[in-house]
Length: 279
Ligand code: ADP
Image 1 (tube, rainbow, N blue to C red):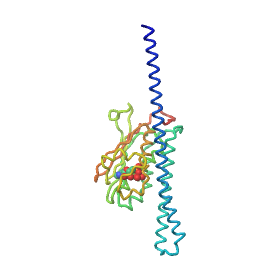
Image 2: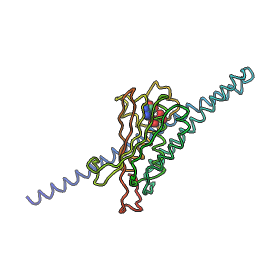
Image 3: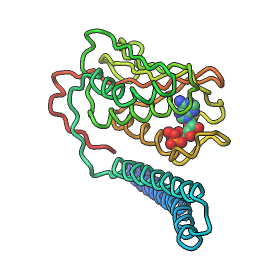
Image 4: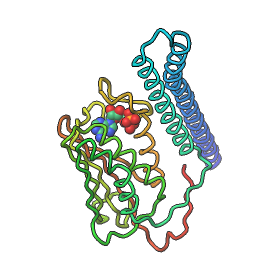
């Protein structure tokens, strides 16, 4: 019987090994699929503005003399806008692929969340004023620093506030809030966290699109501002927050507004100098 048990144990180990290998292969296949989907999406997205720019330049080159001054100016303006779109796209694709490179090491350090928030407010100051939108922030006084990466967090605020601005009508309001939450509210660990919210009184997002907006290149259809975006902003946000071992959530109601929120761990002395490698 001892022999049988041993044989059985060995057999079970082998089975476990096979199951693990199958799991690894499945994951590899999934990753490869995601990668090739990404590449084909990127190529498609890059081709459209490139095709438009080329057509406008070609038309100007061949038929420029037959066009009126106003038409020529319009053609150039459109080509210029398309070039900006291409630049945004290339930048976003590079940011995302850099974030997804698994060997990259990020240095996490204490970040006073008021700093990237104030920098974002300065960046958007003029745009919000031009559009007639109020941008306010409400950072709890004496908030402890969080463990994070300054530039990546700045990019999160930039993307979220940029979206809020695009999808909020004049007269609306955008608010950034940050406050301390006790461990009881925060399921994933024992230490305190800072909750950060970016909310707007914009057009909102349908319940059925709320999961998909984090997917690469997803944009809610039939919206005026669709052309301005790349559909990568929220994928970048999700990726950055996951690097901070947290998750982005949202609450949204069509016609009322949207709030994106996430929690960041408060910096503790024992974490000094931590270098975290993303999975
Ligand atoms: P984009 O570059 O198109 O903004 P994102 O990944 O940042 O790409 O967002 C994906 C889509 O989610 C947007 O196209 C928009 O339809 C929707 N969305 C994002 N933020 C908001 C918001 N604050 N209010 C309403 N819709 C939003």
